[in-house]
Amino acid sequence: MIIDAHQHFWRYGTEKHAWIDDEMSSIRRDFLPSDLKPLYEENGVTGCIAVQADQTLKENDFLLEQARKHDFIKGIIGWVDLRSNELKSDLDYYAQYPRIKGYRHIVQAETDPLFLLRKEFLRGIAELQKRDLVYEILVFPHQLLAVLEFVKHFPHITFVLDHMAKPYIKQGFFESWALLMREIGQIENVNCKVSGLITEADYQNWTEQEMVPYFDLVLESFGTRRILYGSDWPVCLVAGEYKEVLALAKNFADKLSANEQVDFFYNNAQRIYNLKN
Image 1 (cartoon, rainbow, N blue to C red):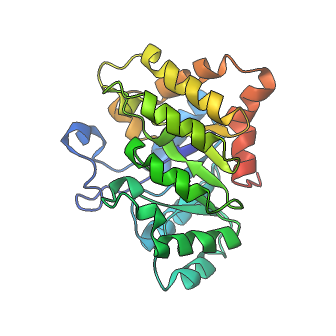
Image 2 (cartoon, one colour):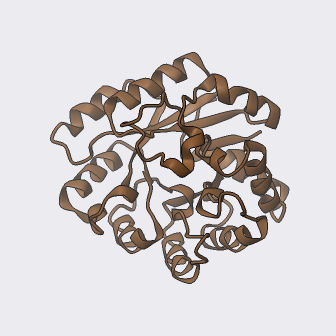
């Protein structure tokens, strides 16, 4: 059994998805559950966590609509404005939908290096912590210093670090990323998705060998109970097929025991997102 802990759906819009640049033009189209389900059937994936790709409340409604129609969508990571005065009422509204497991903000796009530490944002995370909701951290490596300080403010929330903080694999950047990931890994309420690596390497010429140090560092830092598999479909398609992403994860998991592999591919996601089926 496999839970894919990170994938997206969207109806493509030029403005809404402006982050899909010319180099990624192959994914400038709609991606819906009907596109993903055959891949899951082919690769033995039993369910997924659908993650927001647009920072609007309408995105939550769109993902909820997909989940109502497709029961393989086991959970949703949505979006709310965590700095808004309307935050509590927004969270109250979406609390009626247990499929929403938590929220994230696209911090990687913020130019303020201390965005995570601003008073208004911290107040929003405190509200998520009160409600036992997950917060997913989407950052680049140069933002990890702020992440390290940020997560220490909230010992009772479940954090999930997306895409291993998107290491600069193409540039060969490793040591500083590794140093901070080790520090963050010591904080026990932070989990890490093993996902999104091939799109941080050269799209056309990445190799499994260059990924290995990054996989190993995350395993060393977070252990087998706080890592979980994610594909980052359909973004991954700019650099490879779904089966290639899953094969990378399976090759990484070969060094784990049988029970640890079940944790990585299934149990950890079940526990972290409190999945009911």
